[in-house]
Image (tube, rainbow, N blue to C red; front, side):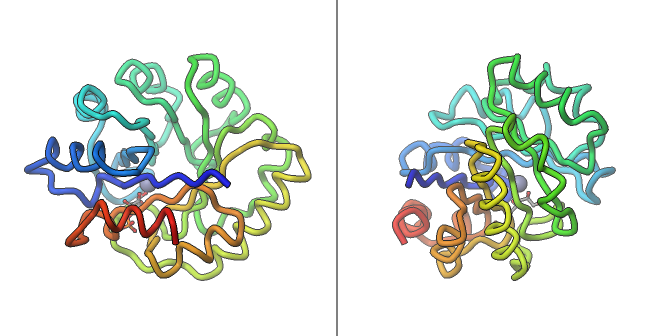
Length: 216
Ligand code: DX5
Ligand code: ZN
């Protein structure tokens, strides 16, 4: 199984972003997870297109844009131009999801859909074969450092079953409260791509922690 670790920059030291990106570059993480928040879809505001553009110039890793914003369609072109290589939109923020997913893929980048903790996986029944990634939010989006919602394990298993049945090649990404302690169980339930903010960036040895998440 191909496992991917995507450190979430939200927990990085924003006074030293270059140093933090260099750490990720030197690590075995494959993706760099960038949380975009608009203060409307989620209560918090993080960073946006100019920051991603700067990050993409110094990152050797795949730029993973997690858009926690309303009306993401308005900004897809800008995120692609800024260097995003995977764009994940929220199921709850998009009206014509099929159109949005096709639009992202036609730009030559990967397309993902994220589900809030209350959104059932069954809603992906028809779109599943079109997706490159499904992001299961294992906390309510908006903040780092929250406690993992236990129901997510079962949800991941149900999603895995749905993707198999629908012949979808989509990766299962999990975001929120991911730790070295729960990583193994997440893989066992079908996740292949783990986002980790606090666990990586607040670790005394982030590169070692990335390896622990990867090889647990
Ligand atoms: C939360 C973000 C996450 C966040 C995860 O809304 O989508 O990516 O950075 O943070 P941790 O890993 O600290 O729970
Ligand atoms: Zn995220």
